[in-house]
Image 1 (cartoon, rainbow, N blue to C red):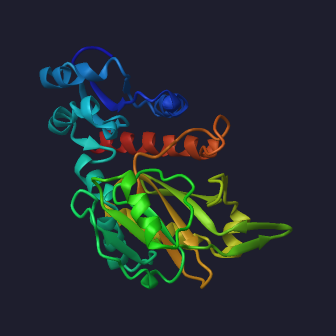
Image 2 (image 1 turned 90 degrees about the vertical axis):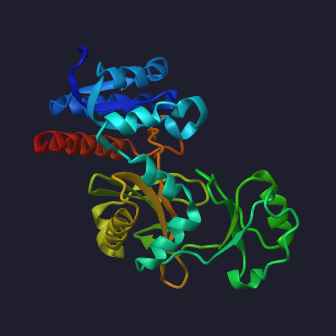
Length: 306
């Protein structure tokens, strides 16, 4: 990149497992004549000064390191001051990291989510009074209010389970939510659990089955989508996009035993874009490629409209 040249897309990354995503994103941008600058681990500390001086100028940016905190977010003020378009906006992402906040926002917009109880942090309330867990209607999940990827959760049933689990995040609130057991849907000779991860990228949706026990993902076929009426998921995810205001995220939605679509993991950002060809729990390769193509197309439209 030449000094002072305006680039279309600045990408900050440092996780080695993002490498395949970066390669696909660069390829998609090159195919659309979208100029890019990929700032890696050794470039990021220099960014504030380069942005302030105007040596680096960008219309849009994706920041895949700032959520690590500490030294990895020192550049955020400079990015906010000098890059007009973020995928995603820092302040909007901070809001969705607060699960109780987005939970009630989702419900207020007419979607269903598992019933939630919120317990103050250990720091705020070391010896909490017993809560009425019967309101959860049976087994429940336990997670922190600002948890990221929670892995494969196991159902809890007792107050003692809650007291022990909350010690893992003493400075954060603890959430208890009704356990969702998905329906089983049969397609030909194959049965699948009705648990889905949907990726949203700049107005497009990509629907995957995601086994809630293993996190293995497979792309929903057009035939499956038609047979089971899964197009409803696309509408729900567009609603969630309107709630959170993000251009890139994923969400988990399940069809419960009562036939109700439940938003079980509201908004995830940053997304894990590891390729399934290299990681068992990764995203199907074709979905990652399609996401990169949507990003490149969106950035090009921003340039054309500026």
